[in-house]
Length: 288
Image (cartoon, rainbow, N blue to C red; front, side, top):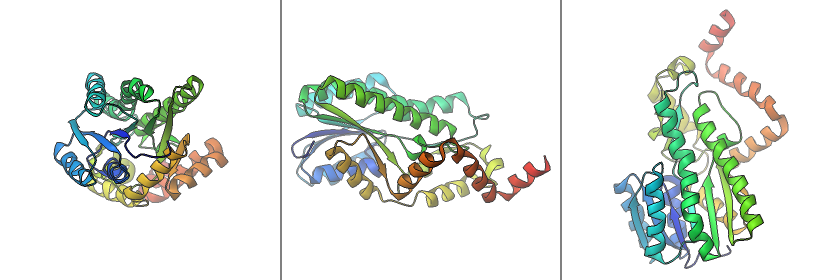
């Protein structure tokens, strides 16, 4: 896909962050938009900003974990716009919790949005993308789909799953030669609201020595690397080049190199760093 002009893109999680900046950059390039999110107020703001570029914008309140709702949305987008060329399965949430403490409802919640939302979006839009003969699926994984971190096991599970699903899907689409391709996105630390909006289990305080507010401040500092605007530009450039995956931000590229170099030995390195950050946990381990 060498141009987005007069194309139609559907974007989940479009009310803020990368979803919003993708919408605005696509609109600037003449792409019509079908936007969805659970936050109707902020979604309307995205639509207003995108509409200023003279493109058609439709809005839908959508829970991506609801399979029937996602399929109904895909059909409605095709009806409203006459075609669909791109689906950005971008909606995502975070959950910080030790795996021995995670509640099943919380695990289902994060997998429903981060993984099944991607699967439903890909499945629902694929027939419409094939009909266009010029389609692209863009699925958002994470650097945590490349490496795992203690306390992020549920998030890791969802993002590794997105990676595996998208890589297999890309190969199947290539083999079918159906006019549709797929790209897996691995963002590093992007300046979005995902940390503030995420869930932090109370049991994490024993791991970090920090309360929930302090943990979120620390997470925000860690992800303050690449702007959402720059992330959108990198993602769209990857789509134009038909890349199989895109590492968004210098930290993502560095983490990818570390994992390639060390293999599974990156795990002791991470544990040492976490113990340095939490001396009380180190002391407890030494005493044991």
